[in-house]
Length: 73
Image (cartoon, rainbow, N blue to C red):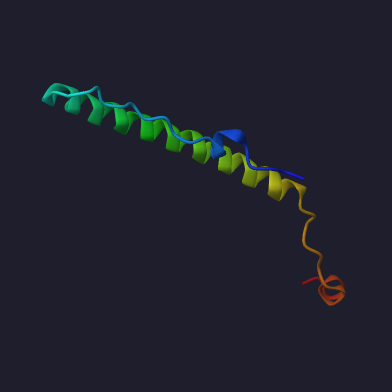
């Protein structure tokens, strides 16, 4: 049985602000969090796409009906 990859189940780690942040700290954290979210989303998306591809690869192909087999449809 396939399970969702660990990368898709791992929560994103975001930078935290220091105590009593300055405006510069807020600006830096805003950019760092945006980058961290983009990287995390990319990692999760890749893990889910890989999982979906593996799941589809393990499924048997759909069967054609005997009528379509006989008539060539």
